[in-house]
Length: 351
Image (cartoon, rainbow, N blue to C red; front, side, top):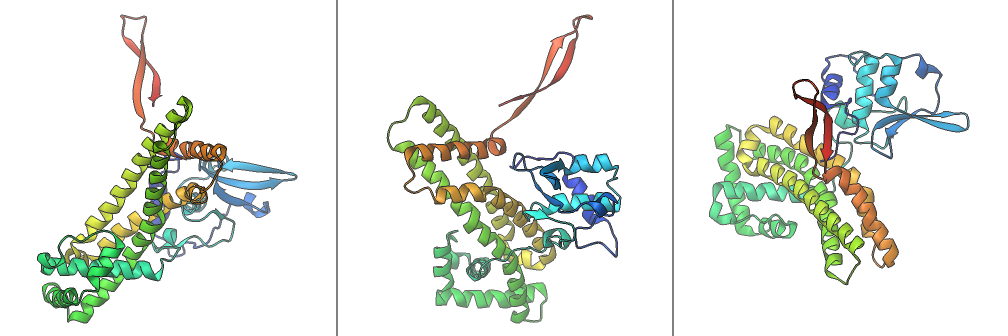
Protein backbone atom coordinates (compact mmCIF):
# COMPACT_ATOMS: atom_id res chain seq x y z
CA UNK A 1 0.00 0.00 0.00
CA UNK A 2 0.99 3.60 -0.39
CA UNK A 3 2.58 4.95 2.76
CA UNK A 4 0.95 7.64 4.86
CA UNK A 5 3.08 10.50 3.61
CA UNK A 6 1.86 12.98 6.20
CA UNK A 7 1.20 11.05 9.38
CA UNK A 8 -0.47 13.98 11.06
CA UNK A 9 -3.14 14.17 8.37
CA UNK A 10 -4.74 10.81 9.08
CA UNK A 11 -8.05 9.42 7.88
CA UNK A 12 -9.48 10.46 11.24
CA UNK A 13 -8.59 14.04 10.39
CA UNK A 14 -10.41 13.69 7.08
CA UNK A 15 -13.43 12.21 8.81
CA UNK A 16 -13.57 15.13 11.22
CA UNK A 17 -13.46 17.45 8.23
CA UNK A 18 -16.19 15.73 6.25
CA UNK A 19 -18.50 14.43 8.98
CA UNK A 20 -19.15 17.79 10.64
CA UNK A 21 -22.81 18.63 10.17
CA UNK A 22 -23.10 22.13 8.77
CA UNK A 23 -25.73 23.60 6.52
CA UNK A 24 -23.23 25.92 4.86
CA UNK A 25 -20.33 23.52 4.32
CA UNK A 26 -18.13 25.08 1.62
CA UNK A 27 -17.76 23.37 -1.73
CA UNK A 28 -14.76 25.50 -2.68
CA UNK A 29 -11.26 25.93 -1.29
CA UNK A 30 -11.83 28.78 1.17
CA UNK A 31 -9.61 29.85 4.09
CA UNK A 32 -10.50 32.54 6.59
CA UNK A 33 -7.13 33.27 8.23
CA UNK A 34 -5.99 36.80 7.45
CA UNK A 35 -2.69 35.62 5.97
CA UNK A 36 -4.58 34.20 3.01
CA UNK A 37 -6.16 37.57 2.32
CA UNK A 38 -2.75 39.01 1.43
CA UNK A 39 -1.09 36.04 -0.30
CA UNK A 40 -1.39 35.65 -4.05
CA UNK A 41 -0.55 32.75 -6.36
CA UNK A 42 -0.94 30.19 -3.59
CA UNK A 43 -1.09 26.58 -4.78
CA UNK A 44 -1.78 23.48 -2.72
CA UNK A 45 -0.32 20.26 -4.12
CA UNK A 46 1.62 17.21 -3.05
CA UNK A 47 5.39 17.39 -2.69
CA UNK A 48 7.32 15.74 -5.48
CA UNK A 49 9.67 14.06 -3.01
CA UNK A 50 7.28 12.28 -0.62
CA UNK A 51 3.70 13.25 -1.63
CA UNK A 52 3.20 15.32 1.53
CA UNK A 53 0.43 17.96 1.12
CA UNK A 54 2.18 21.33 0.80
CA UNK A 55 1.44 24.98 0.09
CA UNK A 56 3.52 26.60 -2.64
CA UNK A 57 3.81 30.38 -2.87
CA UNK A 58 6.05 32.92 -4.58
CA UNK A 59 8.43 35.03 -2.49
CA UNK A 60 9.92 37.45 -4.96
CA UNK A 61 12.16 35.46 -7.25
CA UNK A 62 11.97 32.39 -5.04
CA UNK A 63 9.31 29.80 -4.37
CA UNK A 64 8.48 28.65 -0.85
CA UNK A 65 7.14 25.16 -0.21
CA UNK A 66 5.58 24.61 3.23
CA UNK A 67 4.09 21.32 4.47
CA UNK A 68 0.39 21.88 5.06
CA UNK A 69 0.38 20.44 8.55
CA UNK A 70 3.38 22.54 9.57
CA UNK A 71 1.61 25.62 8.19
CA UNK A 72 -1.48 24.79 10.22
CA UNK A 73 0.55 24.45 13.42
CA UNK A 74 2.44 27.68 12.72
CA UNK A 75 -0.82 29.59 12.24
CA UNK A 76 -2.33 28.04 15.36
CA UNK A 77 -5.32 26.66 13.47
CA UNK A 78 -7.26 24.01 15.42
CA UNK A 79 -8.45 20.86 13.61
CA UNK A 80 -12.09 21.53 14.51
CA UNK A 81 -12.06 25.15 13.30
CA UNK A 82 -13.37 26.09 9.83
CA UNK A 83 -9.82 26.52 8.50
CA UNK A 84 -8.68 23.32 10.22
CA UNK A 85 -11.45 21.35 8.55
CA UNK A 86 -10.59 23.00 5.24
CA UNK A 87 -6.92 22.03 5.60
CA UNK A 88 -8.08 18.44 6.03
CA UNK A 89 -10.32 18.70 2.99
CA UNK A 90 -7.50 20.19 0.93
CA UNK A 91 -5.17 17.32 1.88
CA UNK A 92 -7.88 14.80 1.03
CA UNK A 93 -8.66 16.56 -2.26
CA UNK A 94 -5.06 16.20 -3.41
CA UNK A 95 -5.68 12.46 -3.75
CA UNK A 96 -7.98 13.30 -6.67
CA UNK A 97 -6.63 16.51 -8.25
CA UNK A 98 -3.11 17.68 -9.02
CA UNK A 99 -3.51 21.01 -7.26
CA UNK A 100 -5.90 23.47 -5.66
CA UNK A 101 -5.95 27.24 -5.42
CA UNK A 102 -8.07 29.48 -3.26
CA UNK A 103 -11.54 29.60 -4.83
CA UNK A 104 -11.23 26.29 -6.69
CA UNK A 105 -14.09 23.84 -6.36
CA UNK A 106 -13.34 20.80 -4.21
CA UNK A 107 -13.50 17.43 -6.01
CA UNK A 108 -16.76 15.51 -5.90
CA UNK A 109 -15.23 12.63 -3.93
CA UNK A 110 -14.70 14.99 -1.00
CA UNK A 111 -18.06 16.72 -1.26
CA UNK A 112 -20.61 13.94 -1.75
CA UNK A 113 -18.84 10.69 -2.64
CA UNK A 114 -19.41 10.90 -6.39
CA UNK A 115 -16.42 10.52 -8.70
CA UNK A 116 -14.80 13.54 -10.31
CA UNK A 117 -13.99 11.50 -13.42
CA UNK A 118 -16.08 9.50 -15.89
CA UNK A 119 -15.71 5.91 -17.12
CA UNK A 120 -16.18 5.08 -20.77
CA UNK A 121 -19.21 3.57 -22.43
CA UNK A 122 -17.43 0.24 -22.84
CA UNK A 123 -16.82 0.11 -19.08
CA UNK A 124 -20.51 0.72 -18.38
CA UNK A 125 -21.51 -1.99 -20.85
CA UNK A 126 -19.05 -4.46 -19.36
CA UNK A 127 -20.20 -3.80 -15.78
CA UNK A 128 -23.83 -4.28 -16.81
CA UNK A 129 -22.98 -7.52 -18.64
CA UNK A 130 -21.19 -8.92 -15.58
CA UNK A 131 -24.23 -8.20 -13.43
CA UNK A 132 -26.60 -9.88 -15.89
CA UNK A 133 -24.46 -13.02 -15.93
CA UNK A 134 -24.27 -13.04 -12.13
CA UNK A 135 -28.04 -12.76 -12.06
CA UNK A 136 -28.38 -15.72 -14.41
CA UNK A 137 -25.94 -17.72 -12.31
CA UNK A 138 -28.01 -16.95 -9.21
CA UNK A 139 -31.09 -18.51 -10.81
CA UNK A 140 -29.40 -21.30 -12.78
CA UNK A 141 -25.76 -21.85 -11.73
CA UNK A 142 -25.34 -24.60 -14.33
CA UNK A 143 -26.31 -22.16 -17.09
CA UNK A 144 -23.55 -19.65 -16.51
CA UNK A 145 -20.84 -22.12 -15.55
CA UNK A 146 -17.64 -20.45 -14.42
CA UNK A 147 -17.92 -16.73 -15.11
CA UNK A 148 -14.59 -15.83 -16.61
CA UNK A 149 -13.18 -12.50 -15.42
CA UNK A 150 -11.87 -11.42 -18.82
CA UNK A 151 -13.99 -9.01 -20.79
CA UNK A 152 -14.15 -11.15 -23.92
CA UNK A 153 -15.68 -14.14 -22.13
CA UNK A 154 -18.19 -11.92 -20.36
CA UNK A 155 -19.35 -10.35 -23.63
CA UNK A 156 -19.66 -13.71 -25.40
CA UNK A 157 -21.80 -15.17 -22.62
CA UNK A 158 -23.91 -12.03 -22.37
CA UNK A 159 -24.73 -12.21 -26.11
CA UNK A 160 -25.92 -15.80 -25.92
CA UNK A 161 -29.73 -15.95 -26.57
CA UNK A 162 -30.25 -18.75 -24.06
CA UNK A 163 -28.41 -16.74 -21.42
CA UNK A 164 -30.65 -13.75 -22.07
CA UNK A 165 -33.69 -15.96 -21.34
CA UNK A 166 -32.18 -16.95 -18.00
CA UNK A 167 -31.49 -13.28 -17.21
CA UNK A 168 -35.11 -12.30 -17.90
CA UNK A 169 -36.40 -15.13 -15.75
CA UNK A 170 -34.00 -14.15 -12.97
CA UNK A 171 -35.26 -10.55 -13.06
CA UNK A 172 -38.82 -11.72 -12.59
CA UNK A 173 -37.77 -13.87 -9.63
CA UNK A 174 -35.75 -11.05 -8.05
CA UNK A 175 -38.74 -8.72 -8.30
CA UNK A 176 -40.84 -11.26 -6.38
CA UNK A 177 -38.13 -11.94 -3.77
CA UNK A 178 -37.43 -8.25 -3.10
CA UNK A 179 -41.07 -7.18 -3.23
CA UNK A 180 -40.55 -4.93 -6.24
CA UNK A 181 -43.40 -3.98 -8.60
CA UNK A 182 -41.88 -5.75 -11.58
CA UNK A 183 -38.98 -6.39 -13.91
CA UNK A 184 -38.54 -2.70 -14.72
CA UNK A 185 -37.76 -1.93 -11.09
CA UNK A 186 -35.05 -4.60 -11.10
CA UNK A 187 -33.58 -3.12 -14.28
CA UNK A 188 -33.41 0.29 -12.61
CA UNK A 189 -31.51 -1.15 -9.63
CA UNK A 190 -29.15 -3.05 -11.91
CA UNK A 191 -28.41 0.12 -13.89
CA UNK A 192 -27.57 2.01 -10.71
CA UNK A 193 -25.27 -0.76 -9.49
CA UNK A 194 -23.67 -1.10 -12.92
CA UNK A 195 -22.93 2.64 -12.97
CA UNK A 196 -20.95 2.32 -9.73
CA UNK A 197 -19.14 -0.80 -10.96
CA UNK A 198 -18.27 0.83 -14.29
CA UNK A 199 -15.63 2.85 -12.44
CA UNK A 200 -14.09 -0.42 -11.23
CA UNK A 201 -14.03 -1.71 -14.80
CA UNK A 202 -12.29 1.47 -15.96
CA UNK A 203 -9.68 1.06 -13.22
CA UNK A 204 -9.28 -2.63 -14.04
CA UNK A 205 -8.27 -1.59 -17.55
CA UNK A 206 -6.32 1.53 -16.60
CA UNK A 207 -4.46 0.15 -13.58
CA UNK A 208 -4.59 -3.63 -13.12
CA UNK A 209 -4.11 -4.62 -16.75
CA UNK A 210 -1.28 -2.10 -17.21
CA UNK A 211 0.52 -3.27 -14.06
CA UNK A 212 0.15 -6.83 -15.35
CA UNK A 213 1.85 -5.75 -18.58
CA UNK A 214 4.65 -3.98 -16.69
CA UNK A 215 5.35 -7.01 -14.49
CA UNK A 216 5.37 -9.26 -17.58
CA UNK A 217 7.84 -6.90 -19.26
CA UNK A 218 10.16 -7.04 -16.25
CA UNK A 219 9.92 -10.84 -16.21
CA UNK A 220 10.82 -10.98 -19.90
CA UNK A 221 13.91 -8.81 -19.35
CA UNK A 222 15.06 -11.27 -16.72
CA UNK A 223 14.81 -14.13 -19.20
CA UNK A 224 16.76 -12.52 -22.01
CA UNK A 225 20.50 -12.10 -22.14
CA UNK A 226 23.15 -11.95 -19.44
CA UNK A 227 23.57 -9.04 -17.07
CA UNK A 228 26.22 -8.17 -14.53
CA UNK A 229 25.71 -8.82 -10.83
CA UNK A 230 24.60 -5.29 -9.99
CA UNK A 231 21.95 -5.26 -12.68
CA UNK A 232 20.83 -8.78 -11.79
CA UNK A 233 20.29 -7.74 -8.16
CA UNK A 234 18.37 -4.65 -9.22
CA UNK A 235 16.17 -6.68 -11.55
CA UNK A 236 15.48 -9.24 -8.83
CA UNK A 237 14.35 -6.49 -6.47
CA UNK A 238 12.12 -4.88 -9.08
CA UNK A 239 10.58 -8.23 -10.00
CA UNK A 240 9.86 -9.05 -6.36
CA UNK A 241 8.38 -5.62 -5.60
CA UNK A 242 6.38 -5.63 -8.82
CA UNK A 243 4.83 -8.97 -7.98
CA UNK A 244 4.03 -7.77 -4.46
CA UNK A 245 2.30 -4.72 -5.92
CA UNK A 246 0.40 -6.82 -8.45
CA UNK A 247 -0.78 -9.17 -5.69
CA UNK A 248 -2.12 -6.30 -3.58
CA UNK A 249 -3.89 -4.66 -6.51
CA UNK A 250 -5.35 -7.97 -7.71
CA UNK A 251 -6.66 -8.74 -4.22
CA UNK A 252 -8.44 -5.38 -4.06
CA UNK A 253 -10.22 -6.01 -7.37
CA UNK A 254 -11.08 -9.54 -6.24
CA UNK A 255 -12.61 -8.12 -3.05
CA UNK A 256 -14.82 -5.74 -5.05
CA UNK A 257 -15.87 -8.55 -7.40
CA UNK A 258 -16.68 -10.77 -4.43
CA UNK A 259 -18.81 -8.07 -2.78
CA UNK A 260 -21.04 -7.77 -5.84
CA UNK A 261 -21.08 -11.44 -6.83
CA UNK A 262 -24.21 -12.10 -4.78
CA UNK A 263 -26.10 -9.68 -6.96
CA UNK A 264 -29.51 -10.20 -5.33
CA UNK A 265 -28.16 -9.35 -1.87
CA UNK A 266 -26.39 -6.34 -3.40
CA UNK A 267 -29.62 -5.12 -5.00
CA UNK A 268 -31.46 -5.53 -1.71
CA UNK A 269 -28.86 -3.41 0.10
CA UNK A 270 -27.95 -1.06 -2.69
CA UNK A 271 -26.97 2.01 -0.68
CA UNK A 272 -24.47 0.16 1.50
CA UNK A 273 -23.19 -1.75 -1.52
CA UNK A 274 -22.56 1.49 -3.40
CA UNK A 275 -20.67 2.88 -0.40
CA UNK A 276 -18.39 -0.16 -0.38
CA UNK A 277 -17.76 0.13 -4.11
CA UNK A 278 -16.97 3.84 -3.82
CA UNK A 279 -14.46 3.20 -1.06
CA UNK A 280 -12.57 0.74 -3.25
CA UNK A 281 -13.00 3.00 -6.27
CA UNK A 282 -11.30 5.90 -4.51
CA UNK A 283 -8.51 3.69 -3.12
CA UNK A 284 -7.80 2.30 -6.58
CA UNK A 285 -8.04 5.72 -8.21
CA UNK A 286 -5.50 7.19 -5.79
CA UNK A 287 -3.24 4.25 -6.56
CA UNK A 288 -3.77 4.70 -10.29
CA UNK A 289 -2.70 8.34 -10.07
CA UNK A 290 0.46 7.32 -8.22
CA UNK A 291 1.31 4.68 -10.86
CA UNK A 292 0.46 6.72 -13.94
CA UNK A 293 3.86 8.27 -14.65
CA UNK A 294 5.84 5.02 -14.33
CA UNK A 295 3.25 3.12 -16.39
CA UNK A 296 3.48 5.69 -19.17
CA UNK A 297 7.29 5.44 -19.11
CA UNK A 298 7.09 1.69 -19.66
CA UNK A 299 4.49 2.01 -22.39
CA UNK A 300 6.88 4.30 -24.26
CA UNK A 301 9.93 2.11 -23.59
CA UNK A 302 9.86 0.02 -26.76
CA UNK A 303 13.21 0.23 -28.50
CA UNK A 304 14.96 2.11 -25.69
CA UNK A 305 18.77 1.90 -25.76
CA UNK A 306 20.23 -0.39 -23.10
CA UNK A 307 21.42 2.46 -20.88
CA UNK A 308 18.04 4.21 -20.87
CA UNK A 309 16.21 0.93 -20.24
CA UNK A 310 18.24 0.31 -17.10
CA UNK A 311 17.68 3.88 -15.98
CA UNK A 312 13.97 3.16 -16.28
CA UNK A 313 14.36 -0.03 -14.25
CA UNK A 314 16.14 1.97 -11.55
CA UNK A 315 13.34 4.58 -11.55
CA UNK A 316 10.85 1.76 -11.23
CA UNK A 317 12.70 0.47 -8.19
CA UNK A 318 12.64 3.93 -6.59
CA UNK A 319 8.89 4.08 -7.21
CA UNK A 320 8.15 0.60 -5.86
CA UNK A 321 10.48 0.40 -2.87
CA UNK A 322 8.84 2.94 -0.52
CA UNK A 323 5.40 1.57 -1.35
CA UNK A 324 5.83 -2.19 -1.40
CA UNK A 325 9.04 -3.11 0.41
CA UNK A 326 8.31 -5.21 3.48
CA UNK A 327 9.21 -3.40 6.69
CA UNK A 328 9.73 -5.00 10.07
CA UNK A 329 9.79 -2.88 13.21
CA UNK A 330 11.73 -4.05 16.25
CA UNK A 331 12.64 -2.45 19.54
CA UNK A 332 16.35 -1.98 20.11
CA UNK A 333 17.58 -1.94 23.71
CA UNK A 334 20.77 -1.76 25.71
CA UNK A 335 21.44 -2.98 29.21
CA UNK A 336 21.10 -0.21 31.74
CA UNK A 337 23.62 0.29 34.51
CA UNK A 338 21.10 -0.30 37.26
CA UNK A 339 20.54 -3.99 38.02
CA UNK A 340 21.12 -4.95 34.41
CA UNK A 341 17.64 -3.92 33.30
CA UNK A 342 17.27 -3.25 29.56
CA UNK A 343 16.77 0.31 28.47
CA UNK A 344 14.87 0.99 25.25
CA UNK A 345 16.68 3.30 22.87
CA UNK A 346 14.13 3.54 20.09
CA UNK A 347 12.50 1.82 17.18
CA UNK A 348 14.66 0.60 14.33
CA UNK A 349 13.32 -0.15 10.86
CA UNK A 350 14.64 -3.39 9.38
CA UNK A 351 14.14 -3.85 5.63
